[in-house]
Length: 410
Image 1 (cartoon, rainbow, N blue to C red):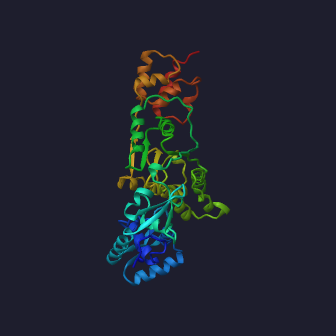
Image 2: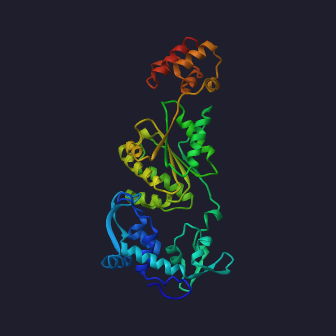
Image 3: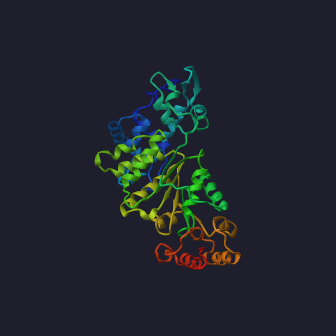
């Protein structure tokens, strides 16, 4: 059992006691398809400070004593199943006894000015923050009983956050009018604790990307921002490479190590991404999803899962219907929300016009297009001749072009 004495030290618990306490403090999965990485041997070792080979031996002993369970589960952010561990009823009882004994102790905290303060473990959360578990506190306490605050992050309320904006393919040059209601709806969603994935939907040319770009700009100084527009030649490595640059600038390097030398280890790279995004307050924007190859779409779905299970990150998808990987699965489990864009009102459609047209013409075009923004931008473009021969426009847009050709100024 926990070594006797008034003071907490790094060696007051055995390896088995540290492991069972760590398992008790780590969220247990509802099923084996969604397992916290802290329940693997590597995760246990990282949290307790015990070498992985020693973790393996200690777990073998705990299993013999019927204190720990072992199963194959899918770890968050990883493609292949891994051995994961939980506690039995007897293991839970042991963990509670260990916790009770540890909380009776005191610890010596070394502050930034090198002064020493003696505090009870019952009050430790007031000094090191609620995000730190007893296991972490024990791991960071040396054998002389001193916990150096420099070894722990300060509480979130005392920590000045650093936000970064990263963009590949972001365009802000187009005029933008209206959408106040939709912008407020999206910004409220970015601030809310629930909901991880949001799709901005609408017909082609409705202004989805323009709206998302304005939300991106408006969200600066509130979150770290990542924008990525997919291209036909993109690969999983190019996407993860962009993430590597983004996270590296946030002080979370190392993701690129899994992509160097031509060796592809996507499973490990996604696991590393999950670790680095876990508590990163970020809104990730993805545009042109239809450009993804099937291989990239598979990897991107796992990126969505990583974000869905993170504590702080969120995703905004600028999307046509059917271009989100495994969209039905996301909708079925309530992970995907939607904002649907309709046409602009008359007042904002008029703002898009750079040419003067008669009221009767405007009413006719507005009725034809139902306020479709791209149609009004086309009207403002000189040289409409020949556009109706192109295949890039909807029947409604072509009708507007043909109609405006009749009124083309000489």
